[in-house]
Length: 221
Image (cartoon, rainbow, N blue to C red):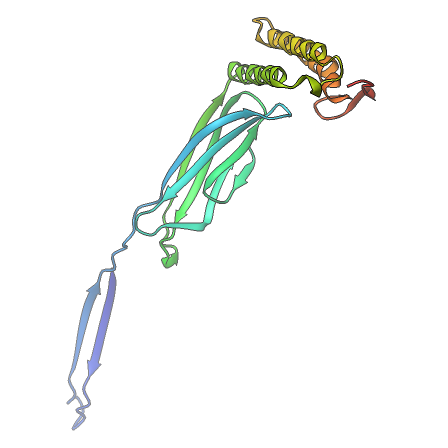
């Protein structure tokens, strides 16, 4: 609400005190045409096990404001120390089991009176990474490796190609059994992958961080 006070005198100066005056007070209410904050949605699209053992989380953040639209210069989306400044799809990596959250803080473009007129909204979306979920992702990755070996041509392997292919498939199947067992065989699975499978597939003796072990190279990949 704005108050206007107006005072005026005429110019009748025939004698002192001859002039007349009047005053008026008026009120004007300025109505904000946008009092609502943006609407925000966060959608988890899927999870993938990345090559270094982390879990990549693919998610999409969208927002809209029917009255004023979105201030695209004032968007902040954060998760696990990663910050994004635009709407749309993003990927963030988490490295352990637990409850994680994606936080989106978004302002609308209601700038009739500058930033003081803006409304904002904040939305938090939680997601859980459990040990069993991680285990299933690892098993799925191993199964895809087995299928890739099965579908590969014999000539891709050193002679005798069929034998080498069968041996490698067997090693992947042993790895699958170690990971899927009820007891904790993760260390055994890691050792098999690091010291048996990886050198024969890549010719390298390196760990998950590419640090060499042994002589750093396998003579007959």
